Image (cartoon, rainbow, N blue to C red; front, top):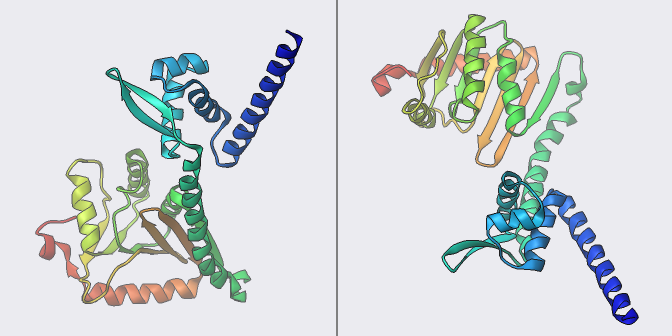
Length: 283
């Protein structure tokens, strides 16, 4: 009995060490300890339905649902049918290679964008008192850029690839519109085919407020191919890139650059057509 007890103690110690190592690795991947516990429960005890998994893991079902979604996104859980019920099964741990490859691609994407920042900051004039450059990463950063526009004291001039409401929360867009209208801000926008498509798609299912002082004209791709959005106000030129997983923006604060872009905008404005002539209605 003494030998059996010693073997059992060593086995339990080994299992605890392995579980601790797995939790630590999951944490480095951005998956918390509860996610690791769920995976280990299924790995050691076998497939279970959602109710059994909540019971065996000691977690609330709502918490289990959220963690299951995370683990599925990481390709660590799969569903199977058994005796007419849906069971969750721990996928092979080797599936983490898929998550690691995804993270490698994200890092590569950031590395590819770094040259833009390096070129911007390499210019010594960027450190001068008259010039500022600010880089914004992700959806939250770009929303901050949109909100900065509401503080403008001059007319907002924009060349738009797509509408902003399709990329922000509906409440955020409503708050943004209210803020602009309350301050009586004026907007002129040059829009393209993709913007018109995004605008029509949005207002098929939404009827929220619009900017009171908004005038737009259409530019054809033969005259100028719009590939991203640019906004000019005060001494600021803001560039927005919001395509699929690529979300970032850059603000350049410089009077001469802003004035040059205003001149460019006015040249395109004269070549653009009234939107009503293209779509038959005002957007």
